[in-house]
Amino acid sequence: MADIVLGIDPGVRGAIAVLNINGDLLSIEDMPALPDGAKGRYAVNAPLLASAVYKSHAKLAFCELVAARPGEGVVGAFGFGRSRGVIEGVLAAAGIPVVMLTPPSWKRLVGIQAGTAAPKHAARIEAIRRWPGKADLFARIKDDGRAEAALIGVAGISREGRP
Image (cartoon, rainbow, N blue to C red):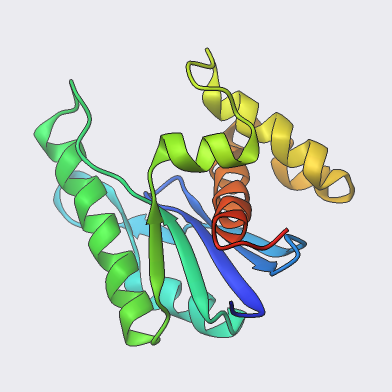
């Protein structure tokens, strides 16, 4: 396994976490998204994402496998799909293999119980528990994307047989 890995929570409110193979959180940043397209809807910005990916020096990425959700509108589903495509394209261009993890699998690997009433809140709590010295990174309600990205990285490391 690579020394440095990425954990990615896709989507415009997601994030990119940089971890070492021991699960130490090295850095994290919100997904670079800018108004783009019809009605100023936000979209993941490929050049800014590429900059973050290249400066991480990661050799492997773990990303949440996203798909259309029941009840989601066409515009939302298309936007989510577009984000996934941008992420996969940037990682491919950087030569970084990506392992997709379903939400139930990565949550199980980090100890978030299935059927948790507030899974995003649970992710923030777990991230603060794992990295208390970096609790401020997960302090706000909107920091759930950061928490999930970091935990996706940890789940991927665990899945690949590391601590």
